[in-house]
Length: 311
Image 1 (cartoon, rainbow, N blue to C red):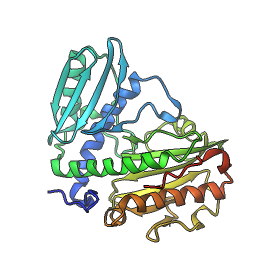
Image 2 (image 1 turned 90 degrees about the horizontal axis):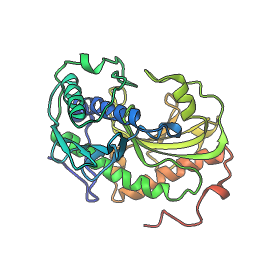
Image 3 (image 1 turned 120 degrees about the vertical axis):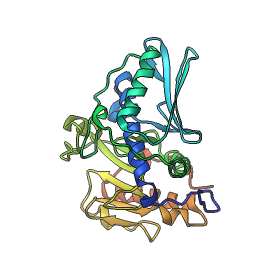
Image 4 (image 1 turned 180 degrees about the vertical axis):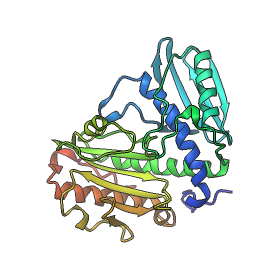
């Protein structure tokens, strides 16, 4: 059973859903890599992401030799649906199974549909990175747990979309990165950034350097990890001014993680609020202002002259 507050935001329990999240993250990596190979490169790897849909997560339209196709995770009916512009449709069951089994069936169906694609079949941003064909461990899939997480994504996506509307400078779509398994939206100051020095497991340095080639203020939503077993919202900027983490942000429950170098707000704070969208918007706006203030962004030319905070 899914429990929600009066605003419809579902309760999330990391310990309850972590095994299902781990399974679905690997499945989304396979689907995301298919999109990566078939799409032309778009700045900051925006061509690889998935989008939140009324059913789950989708690639959106992908061009191929015979028109276009789409792959969608349907978390209402527990299906993976492949749709071609020719009208052909194939479906796969989403259930407890190995990654190898999922990968093999999906690639066979794509071949039968005439979609010619070969991916780098090793996970990104996951340690250990077991090749998909070799990952024969039986993995868990729980309908109620993934459905709850997806419903949270729907609510978060709607607030992120409203937040995005208040910025007239360069801004990313609201999109889902399958590497980190997080929903994100990123604003740009328009200025070049110093060469990114960080590393991410199983991601080429040149990809990360291109992603952070310009100054950003980025926020997102993430399901948690064994090290931080809570779904949470985050906000960071690159490059990071020394006094960024010293800024006062809202709500009072938000805090700056010295280890991660970003502000965090636990999902349960938002979920339990009588005004969940309002509390989340406060966090997004105040952390963006912290970045813009400490990095000296030209806010007058980047922000709209209307208030998206009016609800």
